[in-house]
View 1 (cartoon, rainbow, N blue to C red):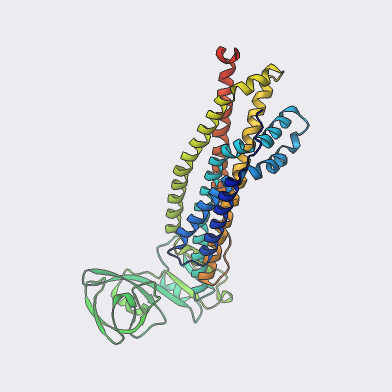
View 2 (view 1 turned 90 degrees about the vertical axis):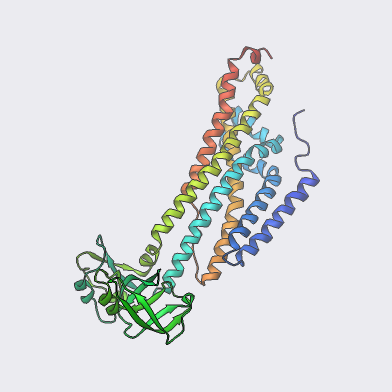
Length: 404
């Protein structure tokens, strides 16, 4: 009497396949989208895939149940859980939907941030004009002695700040630049133009614009000697070595040698850390609401199944068997939601990775936040077990329930 004879109706098939098709199309669009629209397109693809996977979930429940419950197929508890999943696939899928949403959201958002971070680090590494670098190690900068000890062809970098009127401009002093300055195109200057700048020692000096650069990361690039002459407190931030083989066997005191990848990754390390911290807080808040949905769904389901559990008890199921039955069924539900959530998030992440790789022209790894994934699944599982088992244990002491 309780068997769902048509868990997948025609309308459900049409809506589910349509949502999956839309999500697939948006995933393809994500792989070719520009950097500004990529996050929005990826989120739209994930939403469509989530809807489609939720509607088609009853199709996946029986095989997943057979896989999970295979070790328990000989016992009565495993038999009950497996057969219940087979005959109530729609109810199992509906209960797993909040878990699907939690896993899909956590993996997608965390993976998108980590994959983007890796892509930008790869782009900086590709643009890095050296194979290795000497950088400060526990000191605010490199000493002149450390700079002079580097082999010929090394490029010393010394940052400082100057002012154009009241506007602060970032300056990078380079040991290979001796005449004029190179300015960013955003400043609006023309080659050959004379510009008055206020330098850190308080003087106003005039510099000649030698070149205007479109892709410059700082406002002004000047000679290192020019920076030393106008900023007595400036320190060398790094020395770019002509090759990894030219790196000294032992770094000078207060310095260390790092390869191009390490140096490039450190460029935005603090910003990346802050972004990841914010991302984790965002995931915790969002997943927290969906975990409440998981608990609420299972609590309502447990209350609605009192009669079913009562019948099982009357035909001989012990209290321990019923508790194990609910626990095993809950584990199955969380497993189903987790698998379907990954099936939603991973294709969207793969599309983001493909798009970023196309933009920077380099292959980048697919970053999956496994720690956030494990925490999300763990939170869903704990909330689900508590929501499914606690009402049952309480009902066992309820005389009204026992009298049914």
